[in-house]
Length: 379
Ligand SMILES: *Cc1c(COP(=O)(O)O)cnc(C)c1O
Image 1 (cartoon, rainbow, N blue to C red):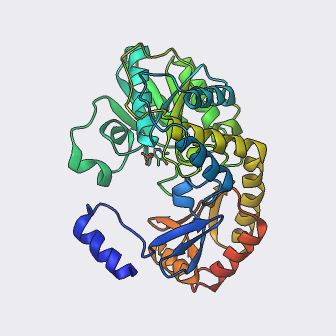
Image 2 (tube, rainbow, N blue to C red):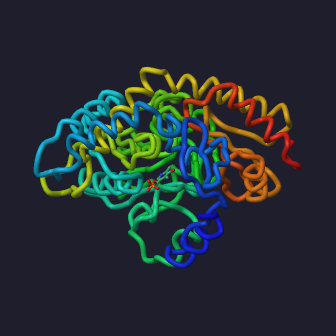
């Protein structure tokens, strides 16, 4: 099949909700994916910060093969070992008291919303302008931006938005009725927005002082992306709830919350598929590999090298670890030209987002920069 045929079939049969780039991928290996004609692309966005070990990493493939040949599903009527092993790993990694596993990011946020309402008995949550927390009705309520929300009103009541990076704005939004504050350590979908250095520390101090829970959404920043296992660790704080997903399964769909603020009671939350053995065993393998191979350190080193190289080209670049945004005059145009040169990135309006697999090496950065330099208007 040719790209054009797939595009036509997609238009005919698939819900037209996605804005796709004109590449049909057939397979992947390491830092590269190959299209239907065997053309190779350097993958510099990793399926939106998901393919943390690159494509078809032997450790991930092995985990999927072994567990799928053993047991894929039982529901949560029964106990399975990989689920408990993963929960233990997450609890130890975050110094929290419990974990709950979900199928993706938005479900992690939904679990957090229910948990804070349950344990505080309060209804209000403060989110941030520019925030993205997901697309189901609860997480959508915490997501800012008319384009995401407007056709789906009314959403949950009691959600307010503070200016991101502005502690005084947050101070004004917190009231007696506030159950929790939810914040991304770096805003991803808005185009890699980095708050002031001491912002998270201030948010933690304020929420503690006001007796309000703090939910940190690490769905995009977690599991090594920014140069630490979790981005909140750059600030040395401890949140009450951490939402995770994206990079956690190395491409296998899974999410979780880890928390230290009470718990659900039997029957209050659940899911047929959540914490299934296949997803859990795969995530365990991915997380152990990230720890053993010190991939957060690699993200910090390669990320700062790449960021410096971009800045030396006078690019308007910012980032932390392997989460980098570059402002350009035409975001979509730049991404399309990079595709022509054989590199995959994504854009948020006029910001090109660079989120490569954490296994990236210096040679891949050189290859990327060479292609970047070849694009008219970027160099
Ligand atoms: C992607 C993302 C989500 C939603 O995750 P899905 O798995 O797409 O539902 C939530 N929060 C942040 C910060 C994200 O980047």
